[in-house]
Image (cartoon, rainbow, N blue to C red):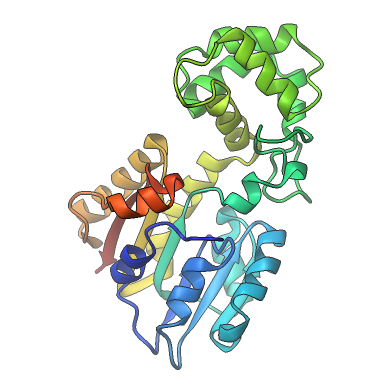
Length: 286
């Protein structure tokens, strides 16, 4: 079952009006999209995502609300142009959930997880870019160590990068996980390859650069009185969102709605452990 993270908080922070237009910049499987659409009458929500497969599934899960949803595929970096092509200049609210869906993580062919064996792909849009195996098997050791350290915030990055280079060619997700685990043995509940996989996924998809582009465009896409709501799961992402929102407030372009980030309730974390690191921040445009 797909359960959108911080569902009630996200809908509340968007302050959805029934006749307005909203953008769910990360539609995924459509959980938040459906929540927004359910509050609309004459308005509609634009369901945007870079993953065509997720959008196709979202169409099915939100079929009963189809008259209030418009589906659009694209990346954050092309968001303004994509919306213009859809005939939209500005929206009354924007939501972005920066997490990876369970659907993506549990599909072996996507190569995003070591729960089962699969190709080292990791692309969110499999029609573009190079798969993770290009980095894993051909990047210089120092480059590999730097991206694991900076994106994964992995303090053992140099040791891991050295082991990966020595273990080449690395053929699959389980092969990579095994190389890492033999190098830095498990010390707790979290698999030692978790941060390495996360870092590679972020590098393959240019996630930090894409988030920068989203934060640059969002204030120009949301009308006065409209809100920007972002749910992040990593300190690296949350810092970017926090700094952007603070700057908007300092410049008098927006009012900060969440003085401190909202976090999931204990009940939600028990029900959906994937939500445990989520932080929600919101601003209202002036």
